[in-house]
Amino acid sequence: MDLSIYAFQAKDKSTAAWVIQHGEPDRENEKRDFTFKIEGQFLHEHEENKHVRQFWERVHRSAAREERKRTREERGKNKGAPTAKDEL
Image (tube, rainbow, N blue to C red; front, top):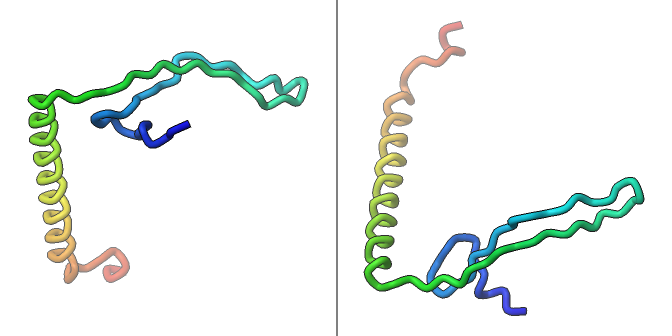
């Protein structure tokens, strides 16, 4: 079985699968086995959609950078501020 085509996130030329039904283990008879049913789909990304996805990935990456930068700056400003321990 070639597991390289399966991915945690949807991506081009991969298989996305999800559980649609599952059973429970028979614990009364000390059995741990259970069954599940999955549904899957092979994904192929069109070129025009690829550009849209890449745009939004850049937007999110940029927003995350700005958020980290703002957090670092706030930590730097608060370095010299008194803490609750200092006030006791």
